[in-house]
Length: 406
View: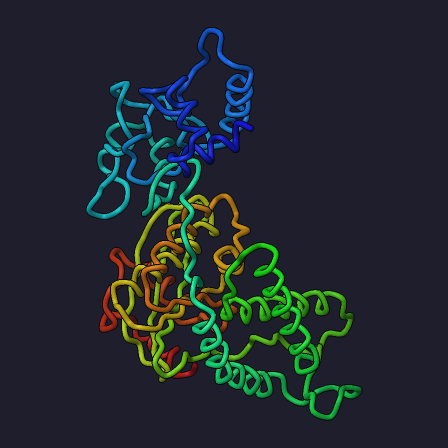
């Protein structure tokens, strides 16, 4: 009950029940710091008990930091802070942020905390949206009328033809025993996987009120086939399997009027230093724009999610009418489309949804490492440099060479 009230009180502040409890028990404060009062109701005691359980495993997601107390609130995922100097009891996390760079004020943090605490703080990704245990109900980029939905579905015909042609080239002649028109097991299983994915999208629409997203339906089909292929590869005792990875072909160009933003991250497990790189290319494979940034992150999953967020930011700044954000990180792409998000990247996914909701048309695609090799090479190149690469004219020669073989 406490967890439900925690979400509702922070998301639905206009609802009657949270407002009544606020007026009774914490009129001048917030729910997270509200205490027990004499002769309080059984319901309120139950809510506070549920809150204590939630807070044992929860912590604040840092946005603008204006309501997070540095010492009193739990905003460090692991461990506690060790200060080198005295910090005011009412000091806020906002004082540790550099608003100009949408990140941490590294110099000030190093002045206030010991090296171990500095490392923990810098690994925390700062949300661009808000702070809090719960995030607002943000509409996804797939909230479009059905007429527009069908236009997108029919527009996918060209991409499906490209996929089928590329698979034929990559897979080669099929093994014996398949129908004559199937050159490989992929040609036999791909229609089955696509129908299954469409059926699942239909069920999500009818039973879970999720607006259908045709691009995610296609992506889910590819993810299913890749997972199925991985299982069959493990079960095969032969060294030379006739079914190679269905996505082993190179980068797939977008439609004529669209721009694809490939995103990837480089991450050092020892130093926790990460680098995000984004490469924007048109239907001819020409690089239109690039961006990169350096940061600290707790793990590679957070780094990959930050790279996708950087792709959305670049797409938003460029202003092209049709954008596709592509990544080789399956967890992030599935989290954007399905709503089942890993807790470590939940606030980053919310940022991605919010930013992309302002774009005229934005879709999210998954690819394998081979289809994302230009962004991967750029991330590795930036990781070896002292400064990020923010212009296509500054791209290293070896990275540009990869675009010629795609």
